Image (cartoon, rainbow, N blue to C red; front, side, top):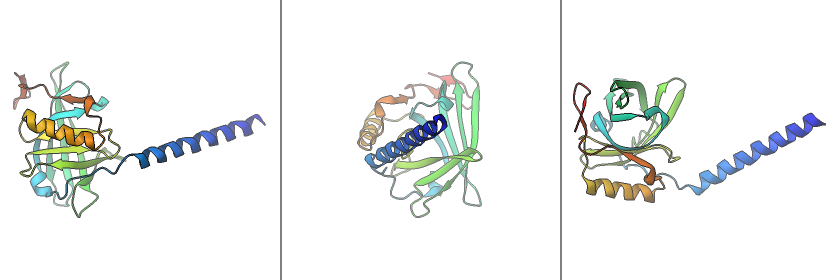
Amino acid sequence: MFKLTIIVVTAVLIVSKLAADCYAASATPVLQTAAKVDIARYMGLWHEIARLEHRFQKNCVGSMAKYTLRSDGEIDVVNSCINENNGKRTEAKGVAWSVDPVDNSRLKVSFFWPFRGDYWIVELGEKYDYAVVGSPNRKYLWILSREPEMSESLYDVIVSRLRSQGFPVDALVRRPLGKTVSGDGSITN
């Protein structure tokens, strides 16, 4: 009898969790992405302007992402940053691929098999001078720029649009203004 009670309670908890997840997913509007992304133009170096904090970027400053298109259509990804505690540059290498070849704004990225995550290009500057990347569950978000800094007015407009899409923008960690990372990886003011 005790085992049956445990099984029933476990089943009820699992069903409750699934129902709660389904409700939460239905309550969150579909994340709007960039209308059309020219993958070749998107390649190159991007500087992180702001992000939602996660353990894999803890203590990171001067974060950058470099994207290189491969001959098979996939994208080599090299994310790097400087650990503010020890001054050492760290890198994470991965691969990304489009899961929506019509507009190329929805990608998957994997830094180690078999794990992969959503990499959705939410917004893209007309001249490919800035990009906003996030996940449909709104737990991941990066504001990127081709230049190490972004104007305050553009940043504010982007944040306002992200707020309307349901991102927790009050939790954004912004790159300190005036701090740049040189080619040797040192941080200057």
